[in-house]
Image 1 (cartoon, rainbow, N blue to C red):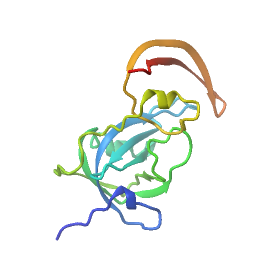
Image 2: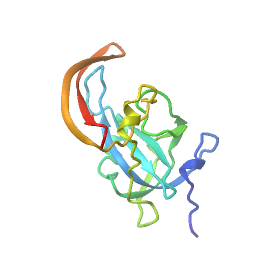
Image 3: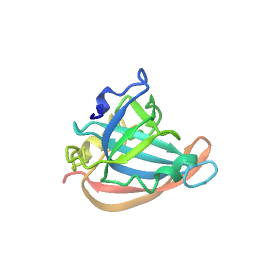
Image 4: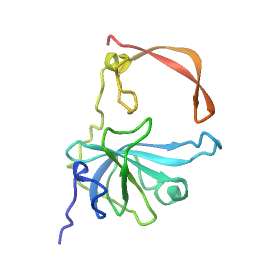
Length: 172
């Protein structure tokens, strides 16, 4: 008997049981800016065979269970996760929802070739640099780095962080 797989575009909190076949487009570890503990979480961008994307988060206490298994570029069948609203700054996708892994989340390597290998969705640099651009979402940008600007200090939730601004040639 074959398992029915769902598409990212159908995922919502209205249903508890989803099974997705997805490629890990991006994976990184998040830092706790208040306590400077690393990692705070493991963050993922997942893409399905229709090219839809969704962000997923694995809290600190569960990273040990998934970090060696989930690798960028690999395709997995994922089930038994929670679905939540995708809110806040620096969201990894424009999807209305995100996935939260739980202790019961199942991850199995898939041999399917139906999920696209091209995981990029490039946004032209001039669009990103436009003042009206919604910068609450992560984007893929391609361009030529022409320099690193001066260091700037940013503050979030009372924690100050220093970063260098990267200058891109927005004409290419």
